[in-house]
Length: 281
Image (cartoon, rainbow, N blue to C red):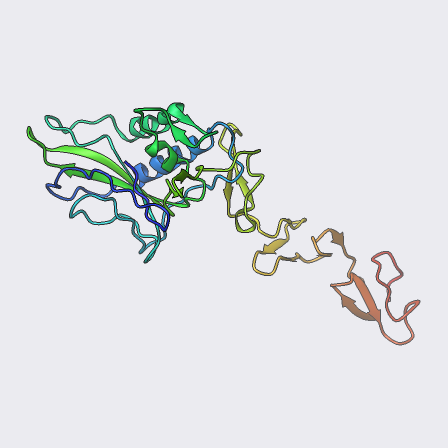
């Protein structure tokens, strides 16, 4: 079950059976596949989500505890940050085989069939907490791993994911909806104004815009993302390097920023003229 910490809700959930030994961390390929599938599923929620964030891996040096007893954390959002946990499938005795990451995540997402978005509640005698944590809109960081558990008939593996910030909140006994309904990306915050689309162009997840300047430079100009200014190649000027310049200033100084000649005394029609189509100095 997922676990959230916060002012409004503290839900204690069954923990996996005792850990036998730490398991190796997920490989880069496994971590990428788990992250990609999470974002794919978050792009498929119905009704559509207006503020669903794209999940990303935590930065190096950060860790999220997975809830496995004595297990090392995998990724950490920082001190005091709320986090959510999801375990599955539960540790079962008799086998170490399990269906794999994809099947587990699909199973969590399938819990949404028993979830009523209108009321924010799950059907009677059903479990939806994995689903609501998986699609919690404001969760931005994801760390997943394996737990090796002791069973009566031998060891078994469990798959666990940690999310930051965590979800499954309640306020005065009323469940908080996991996301806001509306057209995809219509309620993204200013810092997450980009809209990530799946390969099939379905859905939409709020992300840090790849080009926060919302502009591009023409004619092979280079965009400085820190200043949102174009560095233009020789022969071009203008805010977007869209103006081609003639540098035929025989008796004057070329003003690149104005695409003009500042003529010497006695040359030119005027001291300077902001146009590229004028008599040479």
